[in-house]
Image (cartoon, one colour):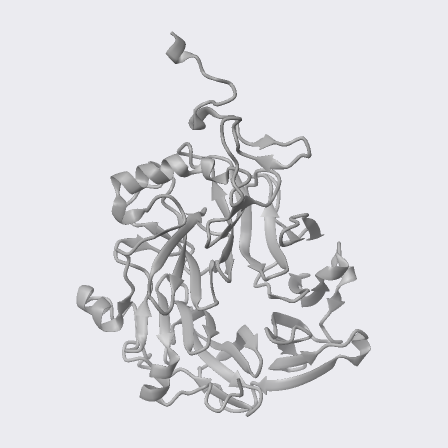
Length: 460
Protein backbone atom coordinates (compact mmCIF):
# COMPACT_ATOMS: atom_id res chain seq x y z
CA UNK A 1 0.00 0.00 0.00
CA UNK A 2 2.84 2.34 0.82
CA UNK A 3 4.02 2.05 -2.75
CA UNK A 4 0.76 3.65 -3.90
CA UNK A 5 1.21 6.70 -1.69
CA UNK A 6 2.34 9.71 -3.75
CA UNK A 7 4.64 12.17 -2.08
CA UNK A 8 2.95 15.56 -2.60
CA UNK A 9 6.38 17.19 -2.67
CA UNK A 10 7.54 14.88 -5.45
CA UNK A 11 4.65 13.61 -7.59
CA UNK A 12 5.49 11.71 -10.78
CA UNK A 13 6.25 14.17 -13.55
CA UNK A 14 3.19 13.12 -15.54
CA UNK A 15 0.85 14.12 -12.70
CA UNK A 16 2.69 17.16 -11.31
CA UNK A 17 0.24 20.11 -11.46
CA UNK A 18 2.46 22.40 -13.54
CA UNK A 19 2.93 25.28 -13.74
CA UNK A 20 4.02 26.30 -10.26
CA UNK A 21 4.67 29.87 -9.18
CA UNK A 22 7.23 31.24 -6.77
CA UNK A 23 6.29 33.75 -4.07
CA UNK A 24 7.39 36.57 -6.39
CA UNK A 25 5.01 35.24 -9.07
CA UNK A 26 7.66 33.70 -11.35
CA UNK A 27 6.54 30.63 -13.27
CA UNK A 28 8.48 27.39 -12.77
CA UNK A 29 8.24 23.59 -13.06
CA UNK A 30 10.33 22.42 -10.11
CA UNK A 31 8.90 19.91 -7.66
CA UNK A 32 10.34 20.17 -4.15
CA UNK A 33 12.52 17.15 -4.89
CA UNK A 34 14.04 18.78 -7.99
CA UNK A 35 17.26 20.75 -7.89
CA UNK A 36 17.20 23.86 -10.07
CA UNK A 37 20.46 24.54 -11.91
CA UNK A 38 22.10 27.70 -13.15
CA UNK A 39 21.20 26.80 -16.74
CA UNK A 40 17.69 25.58 -15.93
CA UNK A 41 16.51 27.44 -12.82
CA UNK A 42 12.82 26.83 -13.64
CA UNK A 43 13.25 23.08 -14.32
CA UNK A 44 11.89 23.62 -17.84
CA UNK A 45 13.30 20.26 -18.91
CA UNK A 46 10.76 18.55 -16.62
CA UNK A 47 8.21 19.34 -19.35
CA UNK A 48 9.93 17.11 -21.90
CA UNK A 49 12.70 14.94 -20.47
CA UNK A 50 10.61 11.77 -20.23
CA UNK A 51 9.25 12.27 -23.76
CA UNK A 52 12.77 13.03 -24.98
CA UNK A 53 14.08 9.82 -23.41
CA UNK A 54 11.22 7.72 -24.83
CA UNK A 55 11.67 8.96 -28.40
CA UNK A 56 15.48 8.68 -28.29
CA UNK A 57 15.14 5.12 -26.95
CA UNK A 58 12.43 3.92 -29.35
CA UNK A 59 13.71 5.81 -32.42
CA UNK A 60 17.34 6.89 -31.86
CA UNK A 61 17.51 8.06 -35.47
CA UNK A 62 14.95 10.76 -34.59
CA UNK A 63 16.19 12.04 -31.24
CA UNK A 64 19.09 12.29 -28.82
CA UNK A 65 19.14 12.63 -25.04
CA UNK A 66 19.33 14.95 -23.18
CA UNK A 67 19.04 18.27 -25.01
CA UNK A 68 21.08 19.96 -26.28
CA UNK A 69 22.75 17.08 -28.09
CA UNK A 70 24.40 16.34 -31.41
CA UNK A 71 22.83 14.06 -34.02
CA UNK A 72 25.71 12.89 -36.24
CA UNK A 73 23.37 10.61 -38.20
CA UNK A 74 21.73 13.64 -39.85
CA UNK A 75 23.25 14.71 -43.14
CA UNK A 76 22.85 17.64 -45.51
CA UNK A 77 22.93 16.54 -49.14
CA UNK A 78 24.40 18.13 -52.24
CA UNK A 79 22.36 18.41 -55.40
CA UNK A 80 24.07 15.32 -56.82
CA UNK A 81 23.39 13.28 -53.67
CA UNK A 82 19.79 14.41 -53.38
CA UNK A 83 18.96 13.76 -57.03
CA UNK A 84 20.64 10.34 -56.89
CA UNK A 85 18.41 9.40 -53.96
CA UNK A 86 15.30 11.03 -55.49
CA UNK A 87 15.51 10.79 -59.30
CA UNK A 88 12.00 12.25 -59.63
CA UNK A 89 12.93 15.39 -57.63
CA UNK A 90 14.54 17.74 -60.20
CA UNK A 91 11.28 19.22 -61.62
CA UNK A 92 9.94 19.76 -58.09
CA UNK A 93 13.11 20.77 -56.26
CA UNK A 94 15.32 22.80 -58.61
CA UNK A 95 18.86 23.02 -57.23
CA UNK A 96 22.24 24.31 -58.36
CA UNK A 97 25.47 22.36 -58.14
CA UNK A 98 26.59 24.84 -55.44
CA UNK A 99 23.54 23.97 -53.29
CA UNK A 100 22.90 21.59 -50.41
CA UNK A 101 19.48 20.66 -49.06
CA UNK A 102 19.39 20.86 -45.27
CA UNK A 103 16.39 18.59 -44.67
CA UNK A 104 17.81 15.15 -43.79
CA UNK A 105 16.25 12.02 -45.23
CA UNK A 106 13.22 10.96 -43.20
CA UNK A 107 12.58 14.43 -41.77
CA UNK A 108 10.00 17.11 -42.56
CA UNK A 109 10.38 20.89 -42.61
CA UNK A 110 7.68 23.55 -42.38
CA UNK A 111 4.10 22.33 -42.45
CA UNK A 112 3.06 25.89 -43.37
CA UNK A 113 4.69 25.49 -46.81
CA UNK A 114 6.40 28.85 -46.65
CA UNK A 115 3.46 30.80 -45.22
CA UNK A 116 5.25 31.27 -41.90
CA UNK A 117 9.01 31.64 -41.72
CA UNK A 118 10.60 29.91 -38.73
CA UNK A 119 14.32 29.83 -39.41
CA UNK A 120 17.28 32.22 -39.32
CA UNK A 121 20.95 32.44 -40.18
CA UNK A 122 23.54 34.08 -37.91
CA UNK A 123 26.96 33.48 -36.40
CA UNK A 124 27.88 30.85 -38.98
CA UNK A 125 24.91 28.70 -38.02
CA UNK A 126 21.29 28.25 -38.98
CA UNK A 127 18.42 27.60 -36.58
CA UNK A 128 15.20 25.91 -37.74
CA UNK A 129 12.50 23.36 -36.85
CA UNK A 130 12.40 19.74 -38.01
CA UNK A 131 10.16 16.80 -37.23
CA UNK A 132 10.52 13.13 -38.07
CA UNK A 133 8.29 12.41 -41.05
CA UNK A 134 7.75 8.82 -39.92
CA UNK A 135 6.93 9.73 -36.31
CA UNK A 136 3.40 10.40 -35.11
CA UNK A 137 3.61 13.41 -32.81
CA UNK A 138 0.48 12.22 -31.01
CA UNK A 139 2.48 9.30 -29.68
CA UNK A 140 5.83 11.05 -29.44
CA UNK A 141 5.37 14.69 -28.42
CA UNK A 142 9.16 15.25 -28.52
CA UNK A 143 9.00 15.03 -32.32
CA UNK A 144 9.03 18.76 -33.20
CA UNK A 145 12.44 20.22 -32.33
CA UNK A 146 14.62 23.28 -32.80
CA UNK A 147 17.86 22.38 -34.56
CA UNK A 148 21.12 24.21 -34.98
CA UNK A 149 23.08 23.55 -38.17
CA UNK A 150 26.76 24.52 -38.32
CA UNK A 151 27.55 25.78 -41.82
CA UNK A 152 31.23 24.83 -41.64
CA UNK A 153 31.06 21.40 -40.00
CA UNK A 154 27.66 20.52 -41.55
CA UNK A 155 26.56 19.13 -38.17
CA UNK A 156 23.11 19.09 -36.56
CA UNK A 157 22.39 19.79 -32.89
CA UNK A 158 18.98 19.39 -31.23
CA UNK A 159 18.30 22.34 -28.91
CA UNK A 160 14.86 21.62 -27.47
CA UNK A 161 11.20 21.26 -28.32
CA UNK A 162 9.07 23.51 -30.49
CA UNK A 163 5.44 23.61 -31.51
CA UNK A 164 5.25 23.55 -35.30
CA UNK A 165 5.66 27.31 -35.94
CA UNK A 166 6.29 30.51 -34.00
CA UNK A 167 10.09 30.44 -33.71
CA UNK A 168 12.96 32.83 -34.32
CA UNK A 169 16.66 32.09 -33.89
CA UNK A 170 19.56 34.46 -33.29
CA UNK A 171 23.23 33.71 -32.58
CA UNK A 172 22.58 30.34 -31.02
CA UNK A 173 19.40 31.25 -29.12
CA UNK A 174 15.85 30.24 -30.02
CA UNK A 175 12.66 32.03 -28.99
CA UNK A 176 9.93 29.48 -29.57
CA UNK A 177 6.53 28.28 -28.51
CA UNK A 178 6.61 24.69 -27.24
CA UNK A 179 4.17 22.27 -25.64
CA UNK A 180 4.11 20.39 -22.35
CA UNK A 181 5.32 17.01 -23.63
CA UNK A 182 4.48 14.99 -20.52
CA UNK A 183 1.21 13.94 -22.12
CA UNK A 184 -0.03 13.50 -25.66
CA UNK A 185 -2.82 15.49 -27.23
CA UNK A 186 -3.59 19.14 -26.57
CA UNK A 187 -1.42 20.33 -23.68
CA UNK A 188 -0.43 23.73 -22.30
CA UNK A 189 2.11 25.66 -24.36
CA UNK A 190 4.78 28.07 -23.24
CA UNK A 191 7.15 30.63 -24.72
CA UNK A 192 10.70 29.37 -24.33
CA UNK A 193 14.18 30.84 -24.72
CA UNK A 194 16.78 28.15 -25.39
CA UNK A 195 20.50 28.69 -26.00
CA UNK A 196 22.94 26.33 -27.66
CA UNK A 197 24.82 25.78 -24.38
CA UNK A 198 21.73 24.26 -22.75
CA UNK A 199 20.23 27.26 -20.99
CA UNK A 200 16.43 26.96 -20.78
CA UNK A 201 13.88 29.57 -19.72
CA UNK A 202 10.15 30.07 -19.97
CA UNK A 203 9.99 33.80 -20.62
CA UNK A 204 6.25 34.51 -20.64
CA UNK A 205 4.81 34.06 -17.18
CA UNK A 206 1.75 31.99 -18.09
CA UNK A 207 0.75 29.37 -20.65
CA UNK A 208 -0.10 30.71 -24.10
CA UNK A 209 -2.13 29.38 -27.01
CA UNK A 210 -0.15 30.56 -30.04
CA UNK A 211 2.64 32.73 -31.39
CA UNK A 212 1.32 34.31 -34.58
CA UNK A 213 3.57 34.43 -37.62
CA UNK A 214 7.29 35.07 -37.11
CA UNK A 215 8.85 36.51 -33.93
CA UNK A 216 12.06 38.57 -33.99
CA UNK A 217 15.07 38.77 -31.68
CA UNK A 218 18.43 40.48 -31.32
CA UNK A 219 20.94 40.98 -28.48
CA UNK A 220 18.66 43.43 -26.66
CA UNK A 221 15.03 42.72 -27.48
CA UNK A 222 12.49 40.11 -28.51
CA UNK A 223 9.20 40.64 -30.32
CA UNK A 224 6.33 38.18 -30.70
CA UNK A 225 2.64 38.17 -31.57
CA UNK A 226 1.30 36.41 -28.48
CA UNK A 227 -2.16 34.88 -28.29
CA UNK A 228 -2.92 33.84 -24.72
CA UNK A 229 -6.13 31.86 -25.30
CA UNK A 230 -7.90 30.04 -28.11
CA UNK A 231 -10.66 32.67 -28.18
CA UNK A 232 -8.28 35.62 -27.90
CA UNK A 233 -6.25 37.32 -30.62
CA UNK A 234 -2.52 37.58 -31.19
CA UNK A 235 -1.19 40.99 -30.12
CA UNK A 236 2.14 42.65 -30.87
CA UNK A 237 4.37 42.48 -27.79
CA UNK A 238 8.03 43.02 -26.94
CA UNK A 239 10.38 42.49 -24.01
CA UNK A 240 14.00 43.12 -23.10
CA UNK A 241 16.20 40.02 -23.25
CA UNK A 242 16.98 38.85 -19.72
CA UNK A 243 14.27 40.95 -18.08
CA UNK A 244 11.28 39.41 -19.86
CA UNK A 245 8.78 42.08 -18.84
CA UNK A 246 6.36 42.10 -21.75
CA UNK A 247 4.75 45.25 -23.13
CA UNK A 248 1.83 45.33 -25.58
CA UNK A 249 2.61 47.59 -28.52
CA UNK A 250 -0.56 47.08 -30.57
CA UNK A 251 -3.60 44.83 -30.36
CA UNK A 252 -2.97 43.72 -33.95
CA UNK A 253 -0.68 41.08 -35.44
CA UNK A 254 2.63 42.24 -36.89
CA UNK A 255 3.99 40.45 -39.95
CA UNK A 256 7.50 40.34 -41.43
CA UNK A 257 9.13 42.29 -38.57
CA UNK A 258 12.64 43.70 -38.61
CA UNK A 259 14.45 44.28 -35.31
CA UNK A 260 17.86 45.93 -35.09
CA UNK A 261 19.32 47.83 -32.15
CA UNK A 262 16.35 49.43 -30.38
CA UNK A 263 14.21 49.67 -33.52
CA UNK A 264 11.27 47.41 -34.44
CA UNK A 265 9.26 47.70 -37.65
CA UNK A 266 5.46 47.39 -37.48
CA UNK A 267 3.09 47.08 -40.45
CA UNK A 268 -0.69 47.58 -40.45
CA UNK A 269 -3.44 47.76 -43.06
CA UNK A 270 -6.47 50.01 -42.62
CA UNK A 271 -8.48 48.66 -45.56
CA UNK A 272 -6.98 50.97 -48.15
CA UNK A 273 -3.42 51.86 -47.09
CA UNK A 274 -0.53 49.70 -45.86
CA UNK A 275 1.17 51.68 -43.11
CA UNK A 276 4.72 51.25 -41.86
CA UNK A 277 6.00 52.31 -38.46
CA UNK A 278 9.39 52.43 -36.77
CA UNK A 279 9.21 51.96 -33.00
CA UNK A 280 12.08 52.84 -30.63
CA UNK A 281 11.69 50.13 -27.99
CA UNK A 282 14.05 51.94 -25.59
CA UNK A 283 11.22 54.45 -25.14
CA UNK A 284 8.80 51.62 -24.25
CA UNK A 285 5.97 52.61 -26.64
CA UNK A 286 2.48 51.32 -25.89
CA UNK A 287 0.84 52.28 -29.18
CA UNK A 288 1.66 53.10 -32.80
CA UNK A 289 1.08 56.79 -32.07
CA UNK A 290 4.32 56.69 -30.05
CA UNK A 291 6.27 55.37 -33.06
CA UNK A 292 7.46 57.03 -36.27
CA UNK A 293 4.98 56.79 -39.16
CA UNK A 294 7.00 56.02 -42.30
CA UNK A 295 4.40 56.77 -45.00
CA UNK A 296 4.76 60.05 -46.81
CA UNK A 297 1.71 61.94 -48.04
CA UNK A 298 -0.19 59.94 -50.69
CA UNK A 299 2.12 56.94 -50.25
CA UNK A 300 -0.37 54.08 -50.26
CA UNK A 301 1.92 51.14 -49.53
CA UNK A 302 4.87 50.87 -47.14
CA UNK A 303 5.97 47.24 -46.97
CA UNK A 304 8.90 45.09 -45.85
CA UNK A 305 10.82 47.58 -43.71
CA UNK A 306 14.30 46.18 -43.08
CA UNK A 307 16.86 47.93 -40.88
CA UNK A 308 20.56 48.02 -41.71
CA UNK A 309 22.23 45.44 -39.47
CA UNK A 310 25.33 47.64 -39.30
CA UNK A 311 23.49 50.95 -38.71
CA UNK A 312 19.92 50.62 -37.36
CA UNK A 313 19.27 54.34 -37.95
CA UNK A 314 18.70 53.64 -41.60
CA UNK A 315 16.34 51.24 -43.30
CA UNK A 316 14.91 50.26 -46.66
CA UNK A 317 11.31 49.49 -47.59
CA UNK A 318 9.10 48.81 -50.59
CA UNK A 319 6.99 51.79 -51.63
CA UNK A 320 3.97 51.40 -53.84
CA UNK A 321 2.43 54.74 -54.55
CA UNK A 322 3.04 57.95 -56.52
CA UNK A 323 2.26 55.97 -59.68
CA UNK A 324 5.28 53.71 -59.32
CA UNK A 325 6.92 51.01 -57.23
CA UNK A 326 10.29 51.62 -55.62
CA UNK A 327 12.78 50.39 -53.07
CA UNK A 328 13.43 53.36 -50.80
CA UNK A 329 16.34 54.06 -48.46
CA UNK A 330 15.56 56.14 -45.36
CA UNK A 331 18.24 57.79 -43.21
CA UNK A 332 16.70 58.62 -39.85
CA UNK A 333 17.19 61.62 -37.58
CA UNK A 334 15.80 62.29 -34.11
CA UNK A 335 13.78 65.01 -35.85
CA UNK A 336 11.58 63.12 -38.33
CA UNK A 337 11.28 66.26 -40.47
CA UNK A 338 14.96 65.70 -41.32
CA UNK A 339 14.56 62.11 -42.48
CA UNK A 340 16.07 61.60 -45.92
CA UNK A 341 14.13 59.40 -48.39
CA UNK A 342 15.98 58.18 -51.49
CA UNK A 343 14.69 55.91 -54.26
CA UNK A 344 17.41 53.32 -54.85
CA UNK A 345 15.56 51.05 -57.26
CA UNK A 346 12.31 51.61 -59.16
CA UNK A 347 10.30 49.60 -61.64
CA UNK A 348 11.28 52.08 -64.34
CA UNK A 349 15.00 51.76 -63.58
CA UNK A 350 16.81 48.84 -65.16
CA UNK A 351 14.69 46.06 -66.59
CA UNK A 352 13.23 43.80 -63.90
CA UNK A 353 14.58 40.27 -64.22
CA UNK A 354 11.19 38.74 -63.54
CA UNK A 355 8.12 39.14 -65.75
CA UNK A 356 4.99 40.98 -64.57
CA UNK A 357 6.81 42.47 -61.59
CA UNK A 358 4.41 43.38 -58.78
CA UNK A 359 6.68 43.91 -55.78
CA UNK A 360 10.19 44.08 -54.41
CA UNK A 361 10.14 41.83 -51.35
CA UNK A 362 13.02 42.93 -49.12
CA UNK A 363 14.60 40.24 -46.96
CA UNK A 364 17.77 41.68 -45.43
CA UNK A 365 19.92 44.83 -45.31
CA UNK A 366 23.54 44.77 -44.18
CA UNK A 367 25.93 47.64 -44.88
CA UNK A 368 26.07 48.12 -48.64
CA UNK A 369 24.18 44.92 -49.47
CA UNK A 370 20.41 44.42 -49.72
CA UNK A 371 18.88 41.00 -50.36
CA UNK A 372 15.43 41.08 -51.95
CA UNK A 373 13.09 39.27 -54.34
CA UNK A 374 11.65 40.49 -57.59
CA UNK A 375 8.20 38.90 -57.53
CA UNK A 376 5.93 38.57 -60.53
CA UNK A 377 2.69 36.78 -61.32
CA UNK A 378 1.84 34.42 -64.14
CA UNK A 379 -1.83 33.58 -63.82
CA UNK A 380 -2.28 32.06 -60.38
CA UNK A 381 1.44 31.25 -60.08
CA UNK A 382 4.21 33.36 -58.59
CA UNK A 383 7.74 33.74 -59.89
CA UNK A 384 10.16 34.95 -57.22
CA UNK A 385 13.77 35.75 -58.11
CA UNK A 386 16.40 36.38 -55.43
CA UNK A 387 18.67 39.38 -56.06
CA UNK A 388 21.33 41.30 -54.20
CA UNK A 389 21.55 45.09 -54.61
CA UNK A 390 24.79 46.98 -53.84
CA UNK A 391 24.30 50.53 -52.55
CA UNK A 392 27.92 51.48 -53.18
CA UNK A 393 27.94 50.47 -56.85
CA UNK A 394 24.18 50.79 -57.58
CA UNK A 395 24.31 47.35 -59.19
CA UNK A 396 22.04 44.37 -58.75
CA UNK A 397 23.03 40.74 -58.92
CA UNK A 398 20.21 38.28 -59.59
CA UNK A 399 20.34 34.51 -59.55
CA UNK A 400 20.38 32.82 -62.94
CA UNK A 401 17.88 30.26 -64.16
CA UNK A 402 18.54 26.82 -62.75
CA UNK A 403 18.31 23.93 -65.18
CA UNK A 404 15.14 22.59 -63.58
CA UNK A 405 13.30 25.86 -63.06
CA UNK A 406 10.20 25.82 -65.25
CA UNK A 407 9.90 28.21 -68.21
CA UNK A 408 6.39 28.80 -69.50
CA UNK A 409 6.13 27.84 -73.15
CA UNK A 410 3.74 30.63 -74.20
CA UNK A 411 5.03 33.60 -72.22
CA UNK A 412 8.65 32.51 -71.82
CA UNK A 413 8.41 33.48 -68.15
CA UNK A 414 10.86 31.69 -65.88
CA UNK A 415 9.15 30.51 -62.70
CA UNK A 416 11.93 31.33 -60.25
CA UNK A 417 11.49 29.47 -56.96
CA UNK A 418 13.09 31.64 -54.26
CA UNK A 419 11.06 32.19 -51.10
CA UNK A 420 12.29 33.52 -47.73
CA UNK A 421 16.05 34.03 -47.78
CA UNK A 422 18.96 35.29 -45.69
CA UNK A 423 22.66 35.73 -46.26
CA UNK A 424 25.81 35.80 -44.15
CA UNK A 425 29.28 36.03 -45.63
CA UNK A 426 29.42 33.78 -48.67
CA UNK A 427 26.36 31.77 -47.57
CA UNK A 428 22.88 32.21 -49.04
CA UNK A 429 20.05 30.25 -47.35
CA UNK A 430 16.58 30.06 -48.83
CA UNK A 431 13.30 28.18 -48.74
CA UNK A 432 11.50 27.31 -51.96
CA UNK A 433 8.53 29.65 -52.36
CA UNK A 434 5.21 28.22 -51.15
CA UNK A 435 6.91 24.92 -50.42
CA UNK A 436 9.28 23.13 -48.04
CA UNK A 437 12.73 22.56 -49.62
CA UNK A 438 15.33 24.37 -47.48
CA UNK A 439 18.54 25.00 -49.38
CA UNK A 440 22.00 26.42 -48.61
CA UNK A 441 24.03 27.95 -51.44
CA UNK A 442 27.76 28.59 -51.40
CA UNK A 443 27.97 31.98 -53.15
CA UNK A 444 31.74 31.72 -53.63
CA UNK A 445 31.11 28.56 -55.68
CA UNK A 446 28.16 30.26 -57.43
CA UNK A 447 30.30 33.29 -58.32
CA UNK A 448 32.91 31.03 -59.90
CA UNK A 449 30.38 28.98 -61.86
CA UNK A 450 27.78 31.61 -62.82
CA UNK A 451 29.62 34.92 -62.66
CA UNK A 452 27.09 36.31 -60.16
CA UNK A 453 29.39 37.86 -57.58
CA UNK A 454 27.50 40.28 -55.29
CA UNK A 455 30.36 40.65 -52.80
CA UNK A 456 33.12 41.42 -55.30
CA UNK A 457 35.11 44.45 -54.15
CA UNK A 458 32.97 44.90 -51.05
CA UNK A 459 34.78 46.72 -48.25
CA UNK A 460 34.92 44.55 -45.15
